Amino acid sequence: MAGLTRFGMWMSSRLRRDHPEKIMAYIVYILYSQKRSRYYVSQTDNIKKRLERHNNGLVPSTKGGSPWQLMKTLEVASRSEALKLERKIKKRGAKRFIEDNQFGV
Image (cartoon, rainbow, N blue to C red):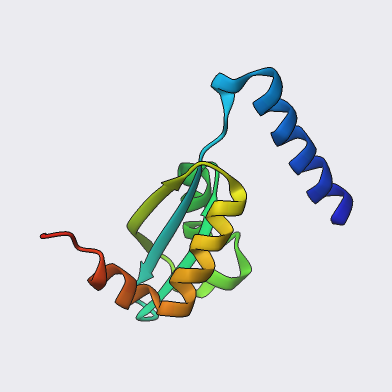
């Protein structure tokens, strides 16, 4: 797993250096399951594919909560930023984070 992570980081930095226009954005997302009355927070670089995996029961931690509803997405420039934001949201609590960040809605 560590080799895979290192490879991912190497590839990401190489893409930035060789093709600055192809910088990958990451998305931190919050899902909600009415079935379980639970929120789920994570990050990805392909939200459509990831949401399909959650709703098809292919992610062990969300398998019992289908269907999952996408509540909020936040785009950041890098995976490291996504991980920091994900931790911040989890520490605060997804419901509180959403309520605190309505911005006049």
